Structures are given as structure tokens and as C-alpha cells.
Length: 169
Image 1 (tube, one colour):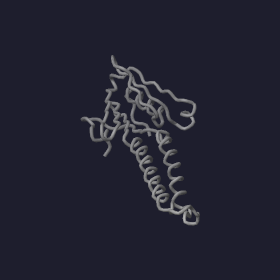
Image 2 (image 1 turned 120 degrees about the horizontal axis):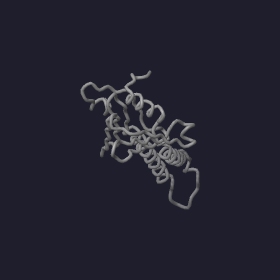
Image 3 (image 1 turned 60 degrees about the vertical axis):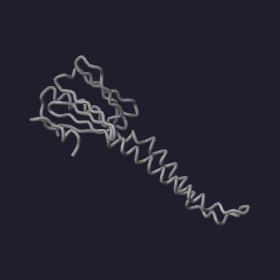
Image 4 (image 1 turned 135 degrees about the horizontal axis):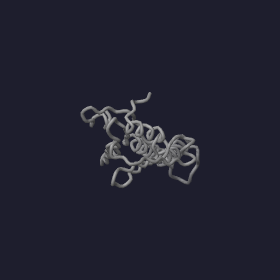
């Protein structure tokens, strides 16, 4: 069960959920791919056929290849956990954002207390469907949520709930 569903108040229903865009995993994925390529090369190269001066280098190079594959899997896992550890939901009463796994940060803004909601989309974000959402509450500082998937749909859902419109399909 997701965080927003577990922490609903009486009469509250989740209207829209989103998460971080896959773009947040891009750096982790590139590093993991390079490490996996190096690791696979070290593991699959027939080192025994290379004549060296005395000691065999095949064993240490294969261990280095295996280590590269393990580190690649760790890098990819970190990116995946970062993406999956952030949840954003719009209910009929609040905007709820939870980020983090071991240490958690939650933001819950009542719809009645939201002054404005802004969306910033870079050119690549418009093409790939991600952007930054900035929610400003009454008397508070702006809450910035970068690299959200479908930021315009998130803003639209917040505006619909503020206006009291029913959930759209």
C-alpha cells in the first residue's frame, strides 16, 4: 500500500498519483551500463590465450570483471530506489508528497491553503514529459518538486480539486 493511501483522513480519496520521471535514473543507468560493459569484457575475454611474462593475470581480471558487474547492479539499484521512494498524490483534500526510504520527508498541503502552483518544463522535459512543480502555500515558502512525471497533469489535478471538480479519467 502506498504512503498516501495509508495516511488518508476521514472522507478523503486519492484522485491522482504520480512519481519521479525515469530521467532521474539516467545518470545511474549510464554509469551502470559502462561498468557492466567493462565487467562483461573482463569476464568474457580469453585471458589465458594472452602470453604474459610469468604470472597469470586471468584470475585477477575475472575478479575485477565480477566486481564491476556487482557495482553496476548497485548503481542501477540506487537509481531505481530513488525513483520508487518518491510518491506524489492529489487527494480531494490535500497534496501529499513523500520522498526518501531510510530517512523520510513528507509534505502535506491542504488544498484550501494553496496559493499557486507553477510548472517549469525545460525543452527536453516537454519532449519527454517531465518538469518541476512549485507549490506555494499561504504564508509559506514554495515547495519545489523537481523531475516529476507529467507535471501539467499534476497541476491540472490540483486545480480541479481546488475547484471541487470530480476526478477525471
